[in-house]
Length: 219
Length: 171
Image (cartoon, rainbow over all chains, first blue to last red; front, side, top):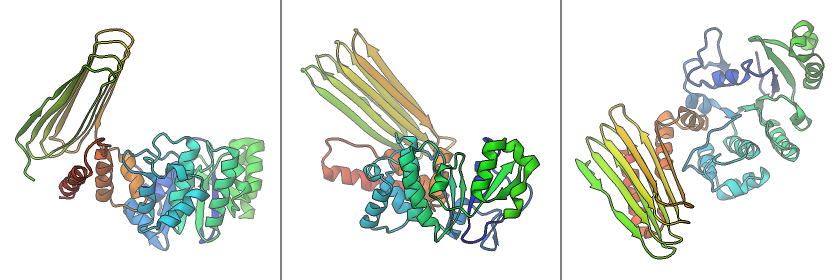
């Protein structure tokens, strides 16, 4: 799998196929062992680097299910993401993502699914990594907020590189992705124009992708 | 600060006036060979009384922390809550949370919530994914964990407590 600078790649695949595991492995979470292959970022091999070392190289992730941390407010998380962030910038970011009223609350504690997702996007926009992985930023989010999140992500990705997991693909109305990949049975079995790939998955199912693979030429 | 050898404390409050309210808050940091045995007991004896016992305990090195709390509801309609959270940060340290609720009549509301464990790895990774090192992430979580609203304390005393905690945690 190769993601070039400036690309916005969508990762499709059935539940449990390892999409989140792939993201965790790229970021170097413990418990994920690279048995084969290499992860290379900006020409540097990452195998062996810790999570924070990879983050310092310019990677970031918006979590699917971020944990709550007692005693650390969303505002503090944002200033961890961007050291020395001004109160004004925090205010603008939080109002763009409709999370102003969560700034003084313990991060993710008692947040609904959609609220936690918006808080994630806010943090990642503050952090502004060169390469961002979004793990289902749209699941559990209502339609209006998908539009809000989607537009924010799209604006951000105009000058950054991204990899995004999504199932429904509704968010693709707002996020202009350049390419999609299908992960199935431990391999990337197909890829191509996101709309076309999603349409075929909806019609034939993931199993259908195995025999079809017709979008490979679009890559 | 030198760790104490042994510290015991068990204040007891009797709520006898109508709508009286008592809150006990303890923030405990065990270091070295310290044994800290702290608890509080509140009797709810009058109509409309409320009681709350909150403790946060962090056990390092080979310290032992006993976090006790005993709430006794004697009349209907009273409310009492006990909250005890602990982090054990060394294989030789120990926390023993002993919450007790005693309801001596009907129609009252008494609850407790106790959680003792290690720092969740997921929380450390979350902070590392935002750029903190493992060590920085761990101390940020401990700091957050110990941050409780100590209602009613004068600002000056509150500042002093924060300063001591900062010093102890960074040392």
